[in-house]
Length: 463
Image (cartoon, rainbow, N blue to C red):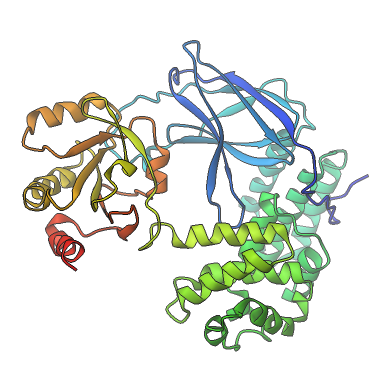
């Protein structure tokens, strides 16, 4: 009989055989729209990738097929709306997504407008992974809500232990190892917040004496929180080390790994390496440390680490930390212009690009667009101007351009490519981006036309 009181681990095997998973279902209101399965490249950086996509047909039905060799924590996404799903290899899922008016026009940023998709797994059994996690989370949320003061202020360990025993009994027959690890680390996060156990016993219980569960979302959430600023602030043997100096060393990776051995809780090299990656992620925007030094260290991890999972995370970290930074590749796109012709960012290679994201309902966008017009007239021979409309309907962009016939530069419509807003991290409109002639970021976000953009254009065109 498995107990949540003890740590039960089934490490993910890189050699496991991939199995086919089929996801079918209905999504009333989403007819003709794209549905995607999105998951993280890794659970430390959270960088996302689309595993598979399909179109919801005229009867609101869809079918998605993917291959995986391990359990995935994923999102089903339609437009900007998402719902969580734990996907087991080799399973067949029949889903019902609650009706939603996806075409409702609201004059807000899609990030704000997004809603959670209400997903029901039809014919789901109580001991299926999603059922177990939903049932556990319901109990967990009620417990935290009712015992907030006892846990966070009074540090009442007895209440937490009582709840743990209750969960042990309720889920004793659950046969999903992923679920037991999930529940174990979710309860562990409560132990940390309630401070019912010292740092050293916590590290030993949950990390030093246990395998690293790279694919378990609660393990990694707990790991990220527990080891936040660990080597620079939390660990007594490590917090006074000269990390700035070590990061300047060409062999910074082995130098740092050797230095971190001073903390006996990090004796296990694989864990020590992952903790280092977590802390490098936090150091990147701290002016006390050099970004080139951190990038060099990550490159060394990619090249020299003995642990394939850590190599993957280090490679993802480089992408995560440098995305949208000066010199990084601008995310590519292919969208329709006002004439319904497909246009790609790569089509503009050879000239710098002033890229903007806007909508017709954004008053600030419209006023800034008026100020783009004289810049376009002045610099049109030296660079390309591209404005991407995030209006839900193509006709709204077209109607606006028919009124503003003097806006003769390239206008594109976002259409269903909502992932592009995520890639450019468009949190508000308008957003301007300067891109060089080779497709690399020069300035993100660029200055607005009414706040110094022309000076940036001059520097780019006349260095």
